[in-house]
Length: 516
Image (cartoon, rainbow, N blue to C red; front, side):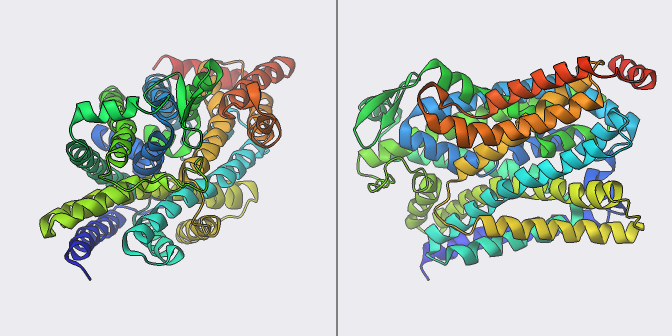
């Protein structure tokens, strides 16, 4: 084993042990199901803000976004990042406080539970629909995190991809099943700091190695369409490909997904005081702007390093459109940093811990949300199985493990694209929960029938657009979130207006929360 590998292993092991310790300590404050799923609504503004954004910025922050920018230039990754930045701010501005007050008033601890109580759906149909869609989209989302861990260790140490992925999954499952939501939130806060340090360090190293900032930009401009927000770079043809208005709009619409992300919305619900959300919004917005901006530019820096021969090319010559190889950019950079001695190897290990942080911070939150959907929303409420507090906790942890196992199965193929998996799951959540979340908070005429129809139509349209419409190409080759989101809103409004208005008690509660 080389000195560089020893240094990397020391840093990563220290990080992983630290996360497990946080989970163990948090378990002492996890006494019942409400604590396990929502932390007892005890999060402070800093932990709320940073855990929400760390759980959002999954492996695509340090692998997906830089890889996409490395491969095709700033347009695709840049417009996506812009949408995410705007979406983050608007979600905190319009959703956070009202959702916190509404769920507190209804004593709802999950997103499906909120919809059930918001619309007084005694049939539990809304609850079941929401829980099923959470499972459908969270399992592959979690799989993307496991895949990132597998690629990390496989690329770095040459170990078996599947073995590395399973080992990482076991660590994530370990601290999440122990401490629940509180452990996930506290570790996410720590992980956001690690991710930030990793981004800054790798960027500085990359710019210096590439010959300075001027040289980085000149190399980017030398590739047709690469340094252009109106075009992308075609690796096979060495030519620019126009990036039209529809592409820009649909990639910018990534921001719409925030309104429907259960693992982010849960943070709004868990803050100890709704009045502290304003501070949380400012912290979160600044961090997202900073981190995504660096992630996009890091891809450009990496490409400049390859152009100047400092770094080997990460473009798969047999399949230049593939993003899988380019997504290992930060891993390759960390490996290069580690060659300068033990001290730099430890620093490189911290960079790689940043990748683990971005992955683990999302996977743990997704496992909590998926687990709550099964144990609380499906088993107990939909099927009417009454469990004691102890049995409920056992069920929660068991379903969390089961969901993780499904994620491992989906991530078994090492050639899967992290960005591709995340984009599909992101569209699913955004279309299923985003429209009804907005309308449930701001339109009192929304009823349970509109909610049911909107969730189903939004979810189905994601599949229809991706697998039937988008393959037609041309103007139809658009990211599925935007059309699915629009269809869901239209369906909710039309169905709500054509069916029985909500009961007066529901309207009164809506007006009461609106005044808070």
